[in-house]
Figure 1: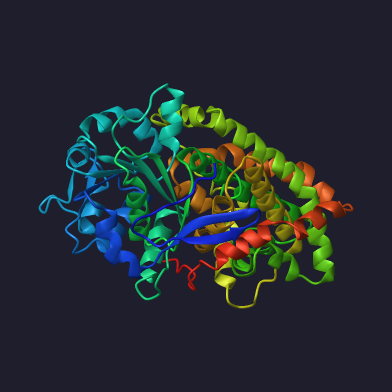
Figure 2 (figure 1 turned 180 degrees about the horizontal axis):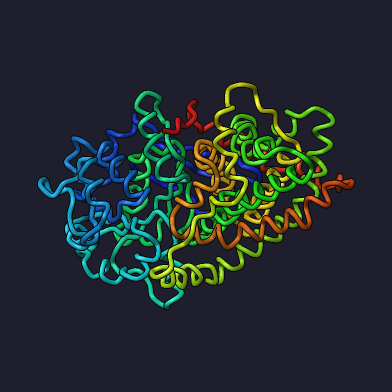
Length: 488
């Protein structure tokens, strides 16, 4: 799971990480003139799908490749409701940049598959059959690899297979790219994977795709490693655990006597606001350092109480993703949901307080709640440790667990709330969150919160203080543009 990068087009950097080094590419618009060389042999790029990633990636690629002679086309299934929005953003049938998905696939040298996971699982054979000889297959997620292995199949022979996987939601990919027009390098970090390379050009092609998306920091992974870390992460600290945590804490604070708005500020608003911002600016240990002595004592008890039960759940999720159980649950749910759509979760009592909390923003600085902070940081660290045990590289660990959370997802949750994110994320992420969020909530309510009232385990806090993740995150932070996402 520790691949390296080599490029004949881009100048790569070696960064120091705990236990060794990794090779990465620092992005930026100054690299755009190198894109024709990176995409040598590619005259047409087809983006299949207009979900959050397709909508963002198609526009970023088109803008970055303007004037190069490389055409970016969008392919949609017949009758797609997304066609009108694609036209509104400049992809049209009249100029040949919008068309039937299989026709676009057949006409493209690089075919980027960004349709929904279940749809891709159901229709990948038709897409593969439409490909021209030697066309490159592009993915932004390893779900299809897991599905192909589950059914005993594989990607078609003779086709390069690459992945560029932005470490953030599609809206972040586009929004930070737009901000990068003024601040060079602003964007969403991405991993790249080369799964098949029959023509020897796949790595430069993948790096060019990442640069064209605006990625400020590109690192190497494998398609399998990306799939495992991504699916586990969205069910754990990126979404599922966050949902379970804020629901558990809101109820805890209400039982303790807080009014609904104060309870919301101490739970959800704290995680998406001051805790996320502090981690982004100062790291995980920066959260504890920002507290006074009394706050640190609460943080330490909460951290020690939460680390174990959170880690048990992350390990369970990882096992179920690795053996195909989680993938099968998504495929089964998709068939069921054709007749029975998912109901939203935003009706639970805590979300009624969101409007009043948002209205109070700016009237006073919200302090970090040490109980909330200790539980959140413990869950994040537990995921870091599980990924370490499974052999993931440090760049993947800190991006999938920490940077994607605090620089992409949590700012959107802050603007709209966690329930909105759960109800409007990808179908795969939504299904996983609804399955695992309640498990985390139960673990927090039944195990962590009762333990947090007692004396904690000093050894766990000592281990956190000396954890190598702090050095790894500090190294990654040096590649971060000096810009925070502006959520619209």
